[in-house]
Length: 195
Image (cartoon, rainbow, N blue to C red; front, side):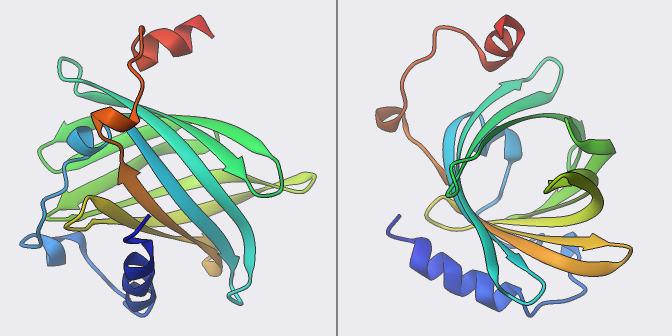
C-alpha cells in the first residue's frame, strides 16, 4: 500500500503515452514473468473511469494463481469486491504459447485473448461481453501491465466499442508473500472442480 501513491503517478504518465509497442520495453527492469508473479496469491486495487475521467466504480480483487509447468498453463481465480457491494468471480486460463506470448480464456471473453511480454511489460488484447445495467456491451480491451521495482504491477486497460474509447481501468497488483497467505489444502484447479 505504501507504494500506491507513487504508482498512481506512473499511471498518470502512462495515460499520455500513445502508440506503445511491447518491444519498446524489452530492456526495462525488473523482468516480468507472468507465471512467476501470479503463482500463489496476490491482491489488486482498482478504479474504472468513463471517457470523461469520472470514476464510475472502485474495487479490490483477491487473486489466487496456479502455474502448471507441464501444460504451461496459469489458472487465475479473481474474486472482485466492488464498493457498491457487488461481488464477482472471474477465472482466467492462460496458456504460454511461446517464450514471450500467451493466450487466455475466461467467461465473458469472446474467443481467445492474446498477449505478448517483453522486459517489465505485458500487453494483451481481448473482446469481452461487459454487463452494463440490464444489457451487455461487447467491448475491446487494450490491457497493459508494468512490473515496478518493489513488486507492484501497474495496470492500465483501455476499453473501446466500435473504435470509440468508452473508459479505462486503472489497477495496482501486489504479490503477497508467504507470511500474508494461508496455505491451501487443494490446488486452484482442484478447488474450481470441487465447486
